[in-house]
Image 1 (cartoon, one colour):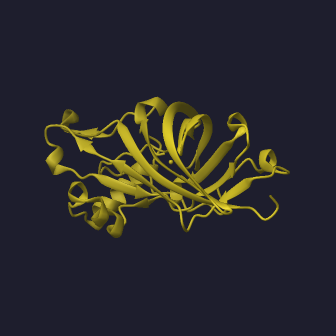
Image 2 (cartoon, rainbow, N blue to C red):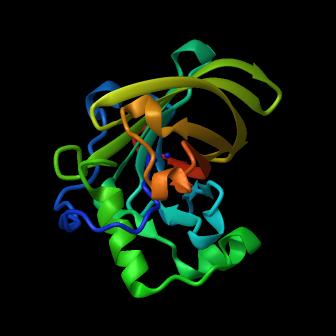
Length: 226
């Protein structure tokens, strides 16, 4: 889902070029297993919601980020304990404030953003004080089921970014179909859990909320050799 984004408008290092390789996944672990599903990036969506706060927060903006190059593998087993999912995406391919997504997100994302605002926010987001995209170009999420009740899964979600891994217990809705699965849910990550101080200006009068909300819908198809 990271996920840890500075939503201020201060300039920093220019964003790195988009990586020339796809996000890495642990293909060796999945090799030779049946019931392996591959994430369909065209039918999947991961959105990050970054909110402003502080006494002068009305002068700032909330930001919405869409994951641009999601890759993933999912393994289903009869014994739930051994099932897992691995997702990965690159920081450089994150799409900042797509107009259509902002419009759909409602009033909280209705403020107008200039090109200079977007450029400076993106630089800040990818810079060394936030995602540190040059030294840590990829973000990883590993999901391990813990319990199931109907279509709801209690899972352990491990997010790795900036070389730091943080785990939390979450609930995922699972839908099974003929040769496909869909995972849908939300995940909240705290910037401070990854060693990041949320961006702030004017002594904290305008600042980025520590918590970043992630909403996701993962659509995966059974691979041909499963």
